[in-house]
Length: 258
Image (tube, rainbow, N blue to C red; front, top):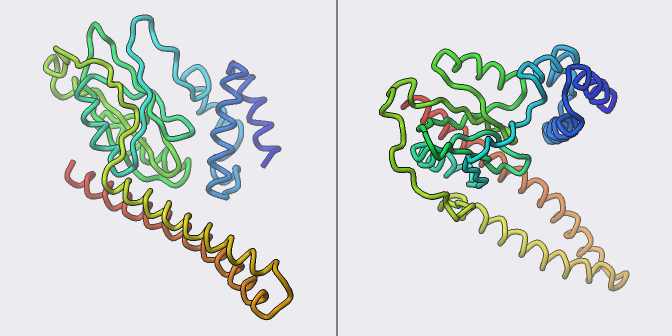
Protein backbone atom coordinates (compact mmCIF):
# COMPACT_ATOMS: atom_id res chain seq x y z
CA UNK A 1 0.00 0.00 0.00
CA UNK A 2 2.85 2.39 0.87
CA UNK A 3 4.56 1.83 -2.49
CA UNK A 4 1.35 2.78 -4.30
CA UNK A 5 0.93 6.06 -2.43
CA UNK A 6 4.65 6.89 -2.70
CA UNK A 7 4.46 6.54 -6.48
CA UNK A 8 1.18 8.48 -6.57
CA UNK A 9 2.80 11.35 -4.63
CA UNK A 10 5.62 11.47 -7.16
CA UNK A 11 3.20 11.47 -10.09
CA UNK A 12 1.08 14.23 -8.53
CA UNK A 13 4.16 16.40 -8.10
CA UNK A 14 5.09 15.75 -11.73
CA UNK A 15 1.65 17.02 -12.73
CA UNK A 16 2.23 20.26 -10.83
CA UNK A 17 0.39 19.62 -7.57
CA UNK A 18 1.67 21.65 -4.63
CA UNK A 19 3.23 19.82 -1.64
CA UNK A 20 0.31 20.70 0.65
CA UNK A 21 -2.16 19.45 -1.98
CA UNK A 22 -0.23 16.19 -2.33
CA UNK A 23 -0.17 15.61 1.44
CA UNK A 24 -3.88 16.37 1.88
CA UNK A 25 -4.89 14.19 -1.06
CA UNK A 26 -2.77 11.25 0.09
CA UNK A 27 -4.10 11.55 3.65
CA UNK A 28 -7.69 11.37 2.38
CA UNK A 29 -6.98 8.46 0.03
CA UNK A 30 -5.03 6.51 2.66
CA UNK A 31 -7.83 7.00 5.20
CA UNK A 32 -10.42 5.83 2.68
CA UNK A 33 -8.33 2.77 1.77
CA UNK A 34 -7.81 1.94 5.45
CA UNK A 35 -11.54 2.21 6.18
CA UNK A 36 -12.55 0.05 3.22
CA UNK A 37 -9.67 -2.42 3.61
CA UNK A 38 -9.29 -2.55 -0.16
CA UNK A 39 -6.05 -2.75 -2.09
CA UNK A 40 -5.26 0.68 -3.63
CA UNK A 41 -4.45 -0.87 -7.01
CA UNK A 42 -7.91 -2.44 -7.30
CA UNK A 43 -9.67 0.49 -5.59
CA UNK A 44 -8.15 3.41 -7.51
CA UNK A 45 -6.66 1.77 -10.60
CA UNK A 46 -3.22 2.29 -12.18
CA UNK A 47 -1.16 5.00 -10.50
CA UNK A 48 -0.44 7.01 -13.65
CA UNK A 49 -4.07 7.11 -14.80
CA UNK A 50 -5.33 7.93 -11.30
CA UNK A 51 -2.81 10.78 -10.94
CA UNK A 52 -4.00 12.26 -14.25
CA UNK A 53 -7.63 12.07 -13.07
CA UNK A 54 -6.80 13.79 -9.79
CA UNK A 55 -4.92 16.61 -11.52
CA UNK A 56 -7.24 17.01 -14.50
CA UNK A 57 -8.51 20.28 -13.04
CA UNK A 58 -5.01 21.69 -12.61
CA UNK A 59 -4.16 20.32 -9.17
CA UNK A 60 -5.01 17.73 -6.57
CA UNK A 61 -8.52 17.46 -5.26
CA UNK A 62 -8.50 20.57 -3.11
CA UNK A 63 -10.94 23.45 -3.15
CA UNK A 64 -9.52 26.74 -4.43
CA UNK A 65 -9.16 29.63 -1.98
CA UNK A 66 -12.27 31.72 -1.51
CA UNK A 67 -12.40 34.77 -3.77
CA UNK A 68 -12.13 38.06 -2.00
CA UNK A 69 -15.41 39.23 -0.48
CA UNK A 70 -17.05 35.79 -0.61
CA UNK A 71 -18.92 34.33 2.37
CA UNK A 72 -17.43 31.08 3.67
CA UNK A 73 -19.11 28.71 6.12
CA UNK A 74 -18.17 25.24 7.40
CA UNK A 75 -20.94 23.16 8.93
CA UNK A 76 -21.92 19.56 9.75
CA UNK A 77 -25.08 17.45 9.80
CA UNK A 78 -25.85 13.80 10.40
CA UNK A 79 -26.35 11.67 7.29
CA UNK A 80 -30.12 11.60 7.82
CA UNK A 81 -30.47 15.39 8.02
CA UNK A 82 -27.81 16.33 5.46
CA UNK A 83 -30.00 16.15 2.30
CA UNK A 84 -32.68 18.37 3.84
CA UNK A 85 -30.18 20.91 5.17
CA UNK A 86 -28.27 20.98 1.87
CA UNK A 87 -31.52 21.77 0.06
CA UNK A 88 -32.32 24.50 2.58
CA UNK A 89 -28.92 26.16 2.39
CA UNK A 90 -28.65 25.66 -1.36
CA UNK A 91 -31.83 27.73 -1.70
CA UNK A 92 -30.05 30.47 0.29
CA UNK A 93 -27.22 30.57 -2.25
CA UNK A 94 -24.66 28.36 -0.50
CA UNK A 95 -22.48 26.37 -2.90
CA UNK A 96 -20.70 23.40 -1.36
CA UNK A 97 -17.04 23.24 -2.37
CA UNK A 98 -15.82 20.15 -0.51
CA UNK A 99 -16.39 17.72 2.34
CA UNK A 100 -13.46 17.52 4.75
CA UNK A 101 -12.11 14.33 6.33
CA UNK A 102 -14.43 14.77 9.32
CA UNK A 103 -17.54 14.98 7.13
CA UNK A 104 -18.01 18.76 7.46
CA UNK A 105 -19.25 20.77 4.47
CA UNK A 106 -17.27 23.78 3.26
CA UNK A 107 -19.74 26.14 1.59
CA UNK A 108 -19.33 29.50 -0.09
CA UNK A 109 -21.69 32.21 -1.29
CA UNK A 110 -21.15 35.21 -3.50
CA UNK A 111 -22.60 38.16 -1.54
CA UNK A 112 -23.09 40.23 -4.70
CA UNK A 113 -24.84 37.68 -6.93
CA UNK A 114 -25.83 34.55 -4.98
CA UNK A 115 -27.38 31.70 -6.95
CA UNK A 116 -29.45 28.75 -5.74
CA UNK A 117 -27.96 25.25 -5.76
CA UNK A 118 -29.41 21.75 -5.76
CA UNK A 119 -27.77 18.77 -4.03
CA UNK A 120 -27.91 14.99 -3.92
CA UNK A 121 -26.57 12.56 -1.34
CA UNK A 122 -25.77 9.15 -2.84
CA UNK A 123 -24.07 5.92 -1.78
CA UNK A 124 -20.87 4.68 -3.44
CA UNK A 125 -18.45 2.27 -1.77
CA UNK A 126 -15.39 2.73 -4.02
CA UNK A 127 -13.66 5.22 -6.28
CA UNK A 128 -14.87 3.35 -9.35
CA UNK A 129 -18.49 3.36 -8.20
CA UNK A 130 -18.20 7.11 -7.54
CA UNK A 131 -16.83 7.61 -11.05
CA UNK A 132 -19.68 5.54 -12.52
CA UNK A 133 -22.20 7.57 -10.51
CA UNK A 134 -20.69 10.83 -11.76
CA UNK A 135 -20.84 9.64 -15.38
CA UNK A 136 -24.47 8.57 -15.00
CA UNK A 137 -25.62 11.89 -13.53
CA UNK A 138 -23.39 14.24 -15.55
CA UNK A 139 -25.91 14.51 -18.45
CA UNK A 140 -28.40 15.92 -15.94
CA UNK A 141 -25.93 18.62 -14.88
CA UNK A 142 -24.78 17.02 -11.62
CA UNK A 143 -21.13 17.14 -10.55
CA UNK A 144 -19.44 15.63 -7.52
CA UNK A 145 -18.56 18.18 -4.85
CA UNK A 146 -17.26 15.91 -2.12
CA UNK A 147 -17.46 12.53 -0.43
CA UNK A 148 -17.09 11.09 3.05
CA UNK A 149 -16.96 7.38 3.86
CA UNK A 150 -19.53 5.81 1.49
CA UNK A 151 -21.54 9.00 1.03
CA UNK A 152 -21.13 11.03 -2.17
CA UNK A 153 -22.42 14.57 -2.60
CA UNK A 154 -23.29 16.15 -5.94
CA UNK A 155 -24.41 19.64 -6.87
CA UNK A 156 -25.82 21.56 -9.81
CA UNK A 157 -26.81 25.22 -10.25
CA UNK A 158 -30.54 25.77 -10.21
CA UNK A 159 -30.06 28.42 -12.89
CA UNK A 160 -29.70 25.58 -15.40
CA UNK A 161 -33.43 24.87 -15.05
CA UNK A 162 -34.87 28.15 -13.76
CA UNK A 163 -32.62 30.77 -15.35
CA UNK A 164 -32.61 34.23 -13.71
CA UNK A 165 -35.29 33.09 -11.25
CA UNK A 166 -32.63 31.05 -9.45
CA UNK A 167 -30.92 34.19 -8.19
CA UNK A 168 -31.27 34.80 -4.45
CA UNK A 169 -32.58 38.35 -4.16
CA UNK A 170 -32.35 38.74 -0.38
CA UNK A 171 -29.93 36.17 1.09
CA UNK A 172 -30.04 35.69 4.87
CA UNK A 173 -26.97 36.27 7.00
CA UNK A 174 -24.31 33.62 7.43
CA UNK A 175 -25.75 31.12 9.95
CA UNK A 176 -24.15 31.12 13.38
CA UNK A 177 -25.01 27.50 13.95
CA UNK A 178 -22.52 24.94 12.61
CA UNK A 179 -23.92 21.58 13.75
CA UNK A 180 -27.28 20.10 12.77
CA UNK A 181 -28.47 16.86 14.36
CA UNK A 182 -31.93 15.52 13.53
CA UNK A 183 -34.01 13.11 15.58
CA UNK A 184 -32.60 10.05 13.81
CA UNK A 185 -29.03 11.21 14.29
CA UNK A 186 -29.74 12.12 17.91
CA UNK A 187 -31.24 8.67 18.55
CA UNK A 188 -28.19 6.98 17.00
CA UNK A 189 -25.79 9.06 19.10
CA UNK A 190 -27.75 8.44 22.32
CA UNK A 191 -27.91 4.71 21.65
CA UNK A 192 -24.16 4.62 21.04
CA UNK A 193 -23.45 6.61 24.22
CA UNK A 194 -25.70 4.39 26.34
CA UNK A 195 -24.11 1.24 24.94
CA UNK A 196 -20.62 2.65 25.46
CA UNK A 197 -21.42 3.69 29.03
CA UNK A 198 -22.82 0.28 29.89
CA UNK A 199 -19.83 -1.47 28.32
CA UNK A 200 -17.42 0.78 30.22
CA UNK A 201 -19.05 0.21 33.61
CA UNK A 202 -19.52 -3.50 33.11
CA UNK A 203 -16.06 -3.93 31.59
CA UNK A 204 -14.42 -2.14 34.52
CA UNK A 205 -16.26 -4.38 36.98
CA UNK A 206 -15.32 -7.56 35.15
CA UNK A 207 -11.70 -6.46 34.79
CA UNK A 208 -11.51 -5.93 38.54
CA UNK A 209 -12.96 -9.37 39.20
CA UNK A 210 -10.65 -11.03 36.67
CA UNK A 211 -7.56 -9.43 38.20
CA UNK A 212 -8.72 -9.96 41.76
CA UNK A 213 -7.65 -13.57 42.12
CA UNK A 214 -7.42 -17.03 40.67
CA UNK A 215 -10.88 -18.13 41.70
CA UNK A 216 -13.43 -19.65 39.37
CA UNK A 217 -15.34 -16.40 39.61
CA UNK A 218 -12.33 -14.52 38.30
CA UNK A 219 -12.01 -16.92 35.37
CA UNK A 220 -15.69 -16.52 34.58
CA UNK A 221 -15.31 -12.74 34.71
CA UNK A 222 -12.35 -12.88 32.33
CA UNK A 223 -14.31 -15.03 29.90
CA UNK A 224 -17.29 -12.69 30.09
CA UNK A 225 -15.01 -9.69 29.57
CA UNK A 226 -13.56 -11.29 26.43
CA UNK A 227 -17.07 -12.02 25.22
CA UNK A 228 -18.06 -8.40 25.79
CA UNK A 229 -15.09 -7.21 23.77
CA UNK A 230 -16.08 -9.41 20.84
CA UNK A 231 -19.70 -8.41 21.24
CA UNK A 232 -18.77 -4.73 21.24
CA UNK A 233 -16.93 -5.09 17.95
CA UNK A 234 -19.78 -7.06 16.38
CA UNK A 235 -22.35 -4.62 17.76
CA UNK A 236 -20.48 -1.60 16.42
CA UNK A 237 -20.30 -3.25 13.02
CA UNK A 238 -24.02 -4.00 13.12
CA UNK A 239 -24.82 -0.37 13.97
CA UNK A 240 -22.66 0.91 11.11
CA UNK A 241 -24.25 -1.59 8.73
CA UNK A 242 -27.73 -0.53 9.82
CA UNK A 243 -26.92 3.16 9.31
CA UNK A 244 -25.48 2.39 5.88
CA UNK A 245 -28.54 0.33 4.88
CA UNK A 246 -31.04 2.96 6.03
CA UNK A 247 -29.07 5.73 4.34
CA UNK A 248 -28.87 3.74 1.10
CA UNK A 249 -32.62 3.12 1.18
CA UNK A 250 -33.36 6.81 1.81
CA UNK A 251 -31.01 7.81 -1.02
CA UNK A 252 -32.73 5.43 -3.45
CA UNK A 253 -36.19 6.68 -2.49
CA UNK A 254 -35.10 10.30 -2.98
CA UNK A 255 -33.54 9.40 -6.34
CA UNK A 256 -36.80 7.84 -7.52
CA UNK A 257 -38.81 10.86 -6.45
CA UNK A 258 -36.27 13.21 -8.03
